[in-house]
Length: 106
Image 1: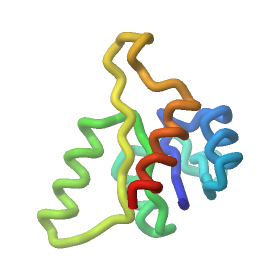
Image 2: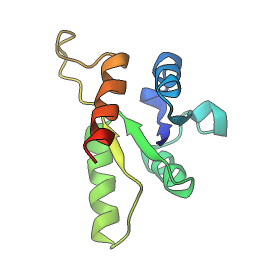
Image 3: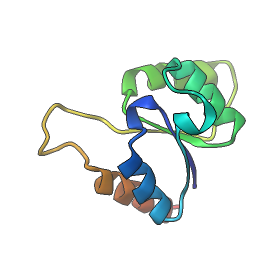
């Protein structure tokens, strides 16, 4: 899967684990996008046909709804939710497992 990790997911560990799992991963630093707004990150991901991976659930939900309402489309958005409970939050390896299971489900 072609993935773009926005600023808040742009961890070298997450990128490496996803790459090791066979994904084509792009980080904001790779394309001069560090510090850009969420809409700019998603616009880049759409233009490069990549699924955007983010922890910013609320903003990306709004962006998704805007695109759908305007009868547009995007390759997808994976949102990693954080509940301020380290025991329940996904670790980098859990993110990779979740994406792998999602793809295996078809």
